[in-house]
Image (cartoon, rainbow, N blue to C red):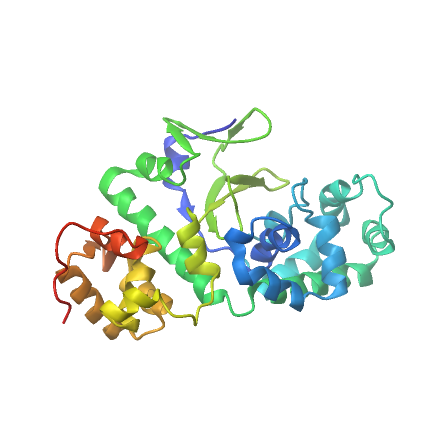
Length: 338
């Protein structure tokens, strides 16, 4: 168990962030390499692998291997950095900073490839090749998925903000994930080892990611000033199917016949997690006014509920709506959807 200790000032600095593309690429690399968890990643894995270049495969296998300790380029390159900013940060790193992380890759029990030895030796061309390999990895992992991944973060940020306003930061931290426990003033997260982390005025960034599974993971910068808690944004297999399935595929045929194809898609999008109207429109591939109209009809039929959170309206599926999606027979007639 890892215990993160907070002061009142530390709590005031906690925020949910959107990971930059190179940070997401690092997290996606083990998911692309895995030979299991197909129920989580669906078609995305096969399509992403097909886009991988040999250089990206070699880099990922050494720096971000599946189920092994990984080199932390998330804090080195900047958790929230754009692709361009992350590349600049990596090229500007001092050699001792980079080598402190690359040491992990040299302890794999295998002879390091020439590019890794050159990278550790301070070869500038090898550093540039690393950046190119990471950009190729990013393209393989994220091509066509940016909108869906962004929608997940929008939902997490909205939910964290809603709980924060209604119940306070402690409650918001305690609801990040089922494996996370808030015992004031300590946040407990599962870990292979046992340890304590004192923030001491440093930042704690909360980063939901579809590529983090099944437990959260803490990344700590070399100077101990920034800590990034990456936690699973996908909570169950239904949500995984929503995210990684065929985005153009039809909703369940019977449900589409009952509600209409678009309205069924809207209901399925709401069922993937509490969602704002803007994110709902993106998930269902409709305009925002259309999403709002369909949500109104579904709400009138008691298939979803909506509540205001700040300036946004958050929609959630009801037990009746869930039953329809699950194909469960319910004990009363369904209201007519107009």
